[in-house]
Image (cartoon, rainbow, N blue to C red; front, side, top):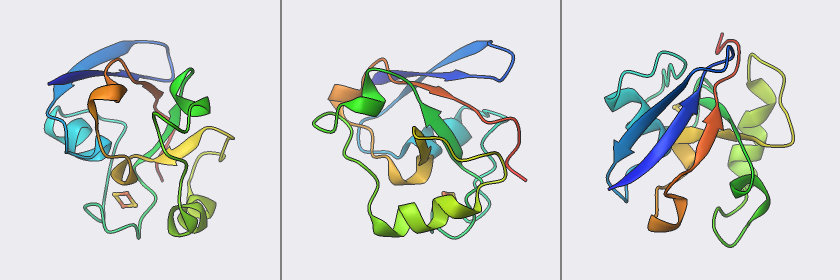
Length: 110
Ligand code: FES
C-alpha cells in the first residue's frame, strides 16, 4: 500500500491509501474524493479526472513517466485551466515510487 495526498482548492489535504497497480483515479474514486468525477471510468474520453501533480513528482520522469500523446490530446479538454503539471489521473499507474504523491484537485471538472 502507498499513500497519496489529494489537496482541495482550499488547501485541505486528504490522505488515501491504495494498492500499487491501481490508477490514481481508481484510488480517488474508491476513497470518495469529490474532486475526481472520472465520468468515462478511465477510458480517456472525459478529462474529468484532471489533477495537478506537485513537486517533486511532476519533475521526475524516472518516478512518474510523462503523459503520452493520447493523454496530452485529452488534456486540451479539461474544464479548469491546464497547467504545466496537469495530468489525467486515470493515466497514472501507482507504483511504490509514488508513495507520498501529492496532487491538487482543480476548481472544477465541468
Ligand atoms: Fe475519463 Fe480519465 S476518467 S479521462
